[in-house]
Amino acid sequence: MKRSESHSSIAFSKIGREIQPPVIVDLMARALANPELLSLAAGFTDNAVLPRALVGRFAMELTQEGQAEEPLQYGQNQGRQKLRELSCDVIASHPGEDRSAYDPVNLFLTNGSQQALYLAVQALCDFGDIILVEEPSYFVCLEMLKGLGIRAMGIPCDDTGAVQPEAMAALLEDLDAKGERDRIKAVYLVSYFCNPSSRSLEADEKRAIANVLLEGGWQVPIIEDAAYRELFFEEAHSAPSIISMPEFDAFPKLYLGTYTKPFATGLKVGYGYCTHPEWLQKILGIKGHQDFGSAHFNQAIIERVLAEGLYEPHLQGIRKHYAHKAQVLESELIDGGLRELGWHWETPKGGLIIWARAPKGTDLRMESAFCQQCIDQGVLYVPGDLCFSSGEPWHCARLASGALPEDRLREAARRFVAVAKGE
Image (cartoon, rainbow, N blue to C red):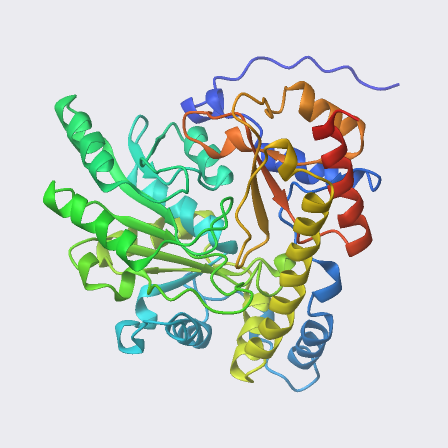
């Protein structure tokens, strides 16, 4: 006979009382649970280009008789020394970067770059503090901030997504006048093939942001999320990172990178590069309480891939693959007549996303009739309002091209267009 249990109420923390299940978890669960539901939502990578052979080869080599057992043991909290050195090389391989600016002592390895972001924010923010974000921005970050009781506030941008320096200065002045100066703890930028907009920040835009902050005396930490930087289609974006730009010398800086999207999401290896020693130590202190070192064996696999010069050839292959996938999705949207209905988007030059905007006044939110009709038709997308700190506008949709095989990607696009047409 099964015992019946009565549960007394628990006095949860403030975070526990306010936390809500992340939308990304729901979207991923739906996509994985129902193969007939074609997901343009969760930004999974494509199983067809996962590096099975490389991972299998190095997993076997690392566990062969006579090999050191060290990769199967606990590692350092900050991560493997050699992989930290090689990760500095990866960052410095991009246009405009200075290898001498990167010291592995400032780099730490994490369970995906999302953990690095979470740790950094935990070290900086109390309930009610403010982080300035691009609009639109990475919706998982916005949800994380909300869950921690942190206010995300959008940096003013024009219709193309370009930052408006004068409007940004006015926003900061207004916050200062309201007594909020000490509440602004950081600026968060997704500078390369942004999730969700797919646009990249130009060097002049970054300089403008730095100048606005400097002129107002706002030397707050700058967090640059470069998760998609390696996933360009034809050419790397030319703007250097904030680490290599002299305009940001006065700011504490954190650069986030990852091997999940560009290599293998299941290995969940990311990193952060922090220029501020005290902030770095706070991050590592919190990390030590969380896991005292991310998955060591996974780090060892990535290290071997990089050390043997196999990472760049892998990237060259998947760049062509994802460029083709983006072209497939876009061509189906165009051929289906979506632009004739007043929808618009920019052709992506990298990443896994098309940021589609319907005519203003169209409601694409999760609770909208449009979204429900898409689910009924067997296609899923990310409502764009989730990517704005204010929850508006409602007429945007994030469409991911990475995961579905080509035939199913085409069918997903056709289903989406059919709903837009009211069919």
